[in-house]
Length: 288
Ligand SMILES: [Fe+2]
Image 1 (cartoon, protein in one colour):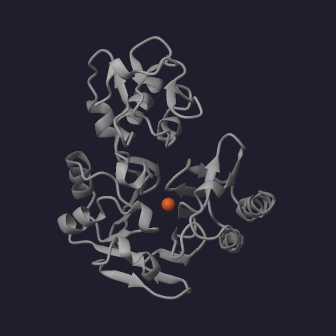
Image 2 (cartoon, rainbow, N blue to C red):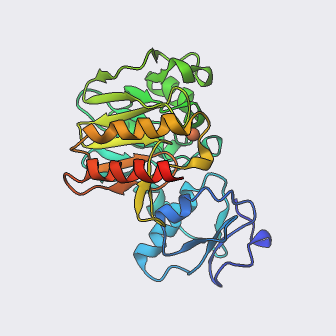
C-alpha cells in the first residue's frame, strides 16, 4: 500500500502519487507512459490522468506495480481495472499484470490454446487472475524463460496441475519443475517453439508462438527512449557476447509480429520487418 506521507516531491499535484518505495522497474511507464515519468531513480506522476483511458491505464499501473508504490489520495473503485486483467494484446495472447516483487516486476503472459493454455513466467498468485485463468480453461504449461522470473510459478503449477518448463541451466530456481530441457537445440511443444538463447543468463529460453508472437524473457525488449528494440547491457548476468549471438540468431524468425518481454516494454512489429529490426538491435549491441 503506497503511503502518501512518503510521496515523492516530483509528483504532479493531484490524486495519483508514487512513494519512495518505488524500485524504478519501469512497469508504470509501460502501462501509462503519459502519466508516469522517470526521475532517474524512481517513477513519478508527471501528469495526472486527463481522460477515462488515462485513468484506467494509471489504475492498471497501480495494480501491476510489484511493490505497491503507486497510490491515490482519494479512494478509487479499482474493480474495472482489476477486471481488465489479463489484457488481450493479440488474439488469445494476454498480458497478466499483477507483476511480482520476486521477479523485480517482470511482465508475464498467458496464451489460450486448444492444445492447452500456457503461462509465460509468473505474476503474483492473486485470486482475480486465478479465477480468470480458470474461466479461460486453466493452465497446461508454465514456461519459465529463466531463473530470475519464476516468482509464484510453483503455486500456479500446484493450483492448475500445470507442467513447468525450464532449462537445466536455470533449474536451480525451480528444481521440482516437471519438464527440464537439456542442451542447446530448439524444442517444439504444440504451437510453441522453444529457443535456447543464452546471454542474459546461461540457460535463458524464449518462446516463439505460432511463428508470430515472441516471448523474449530478459533477452530483447522494445526501448521507447531509443525507438528501437534492444537489450540491457547493465542487466546481463552471463555473457554480452553470447547475448549478441542469441539476438543475431532471431533473424530467421521472419514472421514475428509482437515481442513480449519480461523486463522492458512489449512492442509491435510491422509485417516482415523483424529481420531488419534484429540486424539493428545486434549492431547497436556490438557498439555498446
Ligand atoms: Fe532476468
